[in-house]
Image 1 (cartoon, helix red, strand yellow):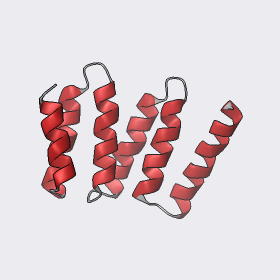
Image 2 (image 1 turned 135 degrees about the horizontal axis):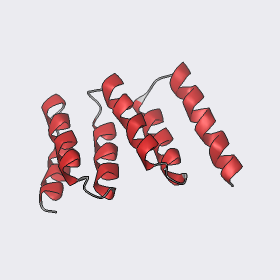
Image 3 (image 1 turned 90 degrees about the vertical axis):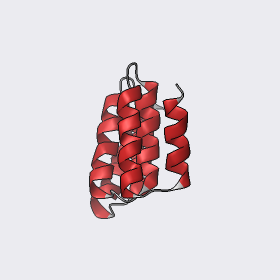
Image 4 (image 1 turned 30 degrees about the horizontal axis):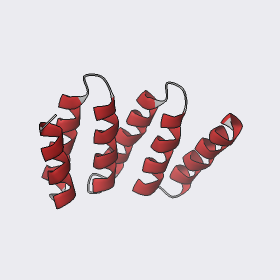
Length: 103
């Protein structure tokens, strides 16, 4: 199934090149995270997604989740959520920040 995952990652990378969209960045990061030691690359992809789409809350949410799964990632996750709230204040980001602050 690793070949299938590799192919899926290649398809998503191609999609991002042709049709950059926040949903594709999230999907690529999800696929990358499934690879052994893929979390760092998944986080890098999401950072690119935030750079390209600073007004899309989904990318901030996913990035904060991945950072929270890292050892010592809490402070960085909180910073990402605060950044998202500055750009696009919405209830989902406020709830996620509140939950992160309680950890």
